[in-house]
Structure formats: structure tokens, C-alpha cells
Image 1 (cartoon, rainbow, N blue to C red):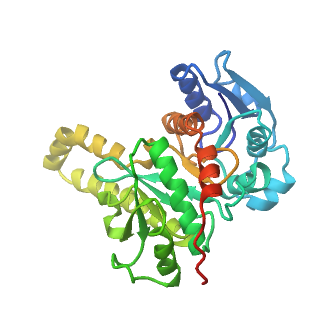
Image 2: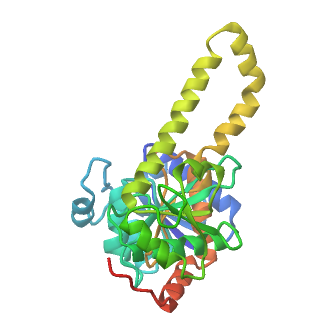
Image 3: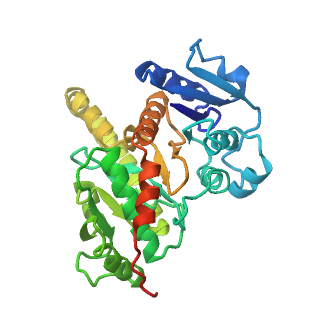
Length: 334
């Protein structure tokens, strides 16, 4: 199995990308990694390994670049070349911690959509209190959505959760302002009708306040709402840990308590750190495309590589394609 990785994307590239890749090939004997980027910079960290190769390029898409324009103009950028490897079959999948918008554009314009999927979805796995996590899609690939798109998100998310996360009959929830069937706007009402007529384990509407309790394994919504949920959860977690640190460092007594609680606090932090669950998958494309967090360290990159490997091993893209082809959509005029 071959994975193409944008070695120059992310806040800590290429060092942490390379370290994560080296850990992955040690862990998985069937894995070959193509690091795409500046060979001289990559070799400053990379030690000799027969299952890591380098595709050299010095062009990089920056975080400040306008995504679509950058993908079209910077045709030899590390991210674009990694996507091309997945598109032409030189690699089974690609991964980047770089510009999110540019990676989505690379997925659309370079890798291409699965026939029958109108809108790909960005799907991170987010933490829950119990540590199981839940898949959220769409988390920002598309600001607007139709009910049919949410149905497709549910299908793709359910397949991924079953095959990669090992969840039998994943519970699919529709994010809404209430749990009652007739709650919500026109989009959610139509989406509810579509979802209840599928073979999915659809449990109905779920509310945002219950997400961290693990109310569902797959939560579907439009990209505008999903992105706000993602950033709210991320910001709340960071703020809570800052407040906790301030409280525990406020006095000599609290510092002693902090020393005793340190192992438990570290475990709590790891439970709520969504980078431990891997990257955000772009579902609906012809090959697996994974977006790792921009601040990913070597461990987070390793987690994203492990996730990508599982997607390829379980042929998630093939199963999505087959299911979409077999789905007889129930058309509801909006």
C-alpha cells in the first residue's frame, strides 16, 4: 500500500510530518510512504528507510493562499502533487496538514468526485466524554446543502464508522434544534424524511448539547452549522483547560493538588484531543483524502496515517461508490 503525504503542509512541517511517517512505516510493514516536498529539508529529519521515498518539489501552498487559485496556479506544489499521486493510481491515498481549503480544492479538481455524489463532505472524528468519539459531517466543505446531500453524508459516514472505526450498525443522528421529528427548518425536515426511509440505523434528531455525551456515532448537518460546531467544541475545550490551569496554579495548596491530579488531567486532555482520532476525511472522492490538523505533531500525523491506511484496507471508497450506485434516492422537492 502506498500513501502520498504532503511533507510541507502544516505548522511543523516537514519535521513532524517526517517523524510521523517514520513511525508509521515501523508500525505497518505493508506501508510505503511517498513524502512530497523539498528533498533537502526532508532529509534533515529522515533517516534511511527503504519504504519511504521522496517526490521532490520546492513549491508550497501557504495557509494565506486563496485555495482554488493556488491549486490552479501552483501545479507543482507539494499538496497538489500528493493529490495527483492518488488520482493517477501512483498512491492509494493522500494526506496533508496544509491549507484546508486548498486540500478540498485539490480533492475536487485533481482527485475528482465519485459519480452520484454532488457534494463531498469534510468529516472529522470528534471526542466524547466516554472516549468513543463521533463522526461529524459536513464540517465545512460546503456552506449550503440539500436534503439529498445530508442523506449521502449519512451513508458515507455510516460506512466509514463501520469499516474503519469498527462500530456495528452505527447510530446516525441529524443535528437539529430539538429531538422531535417535525423540529427544524425546511432542510432538516426534508432530510429527516429521507433518512428514515434508508436502511441506516437512523435514530432521529440530536441536539448539539448531547454530542459530547456520545448520543450518536455519526452526526450529519450542513457545512455552515458543522463548522461552527467544530470550532465551538475546539474553542471550549481549549478555554476550559486554560481556566483549569489558572485555578490549579492559583495557590500553593492548589499546586499540590495539581501535582496529585496530573496523571488524571493528562488522560482527560488526551481523551478530549481530537487529533488522537486521526485527521478529517474528505468523503465522496475517488480516492481517500485526509486532512490532518495544521498543528499536528508526529503522533497526530501517525494517527492520521493509521486512519488513512484503514480506509484503504477496508476499501471505504469502493463501498461508498457501490452503495451510492445502489441507492434509489427518494426525491423530495424543496
